[in-house]
Structure formats: C-alpha cells, structure tokens
Image 1: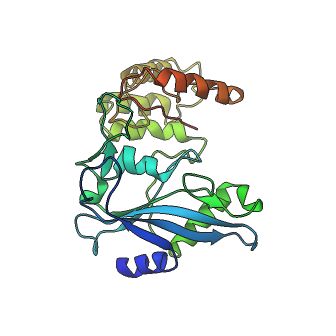
Image 2 (image 1 turned 45 degrees about the horizontal axis):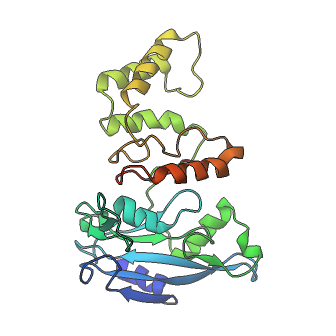
Image 3 (image 1 turned 60 degrees about the horizontal axis):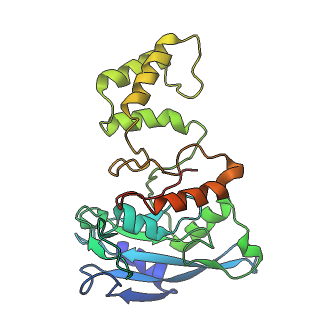
Length: 271
C-alpha cells in the first residue's frame, strides 16, 4: 500500500534523489527525495508548485506508515521540521562561526529511525521553496492549505498534530499534555482537575483554590520551553507576548538580539 501511495504521489512530480548536502561529510546514509508537485484550486488560474522533502524510513520503509508533516506558522518551511524537530539531520551547534556554511550532523532520535517515512511539505504556497504561479494563487487561507495538502497526497491518510493551535480552548489541553509528558506531577494534575474542572482560560476570580493551584502549575513549568520541551528556554524567544501591530519591530529586535544568544537557542514563534 505504501509503495502504491508513493507512486501516486510522486509519479507526476519533478523530483530528484539527493545524495549529498552542503555541510554534511560524505553521502547521506538515508534516502532523501525532493521535488515539486503542481496543485491547483477550483479555478485553473490558481495553480501553485509545492515543494516537498521525502525521507524514506530507515527501519522498514515498505511496512512503516507515511507521515505528512506541515510546519506551523503559517509560512514556516518544512525544512524547519526536518532540521530542528524530527528529521534525520540537524545543524551542529556550539561551533565558532568561520564564515562558511553551517555543518550538519545526524540526529540519533529521528522519527525515520523506527517510526515512519516522512514527507515535509512547504505549505501554503509562498512558503519555503513552494511558490504560486499566478497572482490569484498568492492569496491564501486555511481552506486552500488543506485543499492543496489533500491534492498533494491524492489519498486520505492518518495525520498527527504536532504543537497545533486548533481551537480557542487550546490552552485547556496543554495541562493534560504537560501531565502526559511528565512535566507536572500526578498530584498537581489531579488538583487542577478537581478545583478548575478543566477550565484554565477564564478562571473564576472567586475560585481561590483553582487560582492557587493554577499559579503552582505556572511556576512548575515556568522554565520549560513549551513549544519544544527538549530544547532550552531562551529569554529572547518570540513566543512571549507580542502585540500584533508590533510584529515587525519585535521581529527586528529579536533578530538583533539573536546574534548574541547561545548557539543552542533558536528564535521561534507561536501564533
């Protein structure tokens, strides 16, 4: 089934097998394919070329599932997920900059090691190497993104949401997630459930027990980088409060400050 799906997906694409990458010593020890697939809206003049990175499972590619990874933003390239989150390569850190390209290293805990084949997709059009072919295709929406992703796959598949913002009640779901990730204790989690009844967004000011236990929760995770719990929390991270009218100024400020941040810190965003 997987081989059939891959054939359907890539049969009409302009693709290439990449064997070497700048900054990586020697040939890649995994299969990396990149290329473009044309997608379109209901109108013929809204075509776009979508760029993908396909990485074959290093475990059992014929039996392992195929995962489609869309990096958030919107507008963040799929390469971000590949190099900074779950892919088989990453940038080396703590190296003194010498004017050359950054070096790449293998990630020992890549999802391709034992979990799945992965397609990292640059969506919406205009993200990464993907580009709209007409002026009307420049205008984007959530519906267009989903429609283009479905066109890209041409088949239904199971998907996983990684760090999504899917509902106004998103903050309510962070506490169960943090509990499952062992970031808060069973006792604290049960106390939150008992006193707050699952509502952590607009806490009743009269509910002093909930206010107190929620404050304990915030103190507990205050030093955790909630967007990526395996990475250090950096003081200049973009996920702090940023009023929408100041996005550009704030981005410039963060870019400037990032020049002096430790190499292990990445400037990230949360929308």
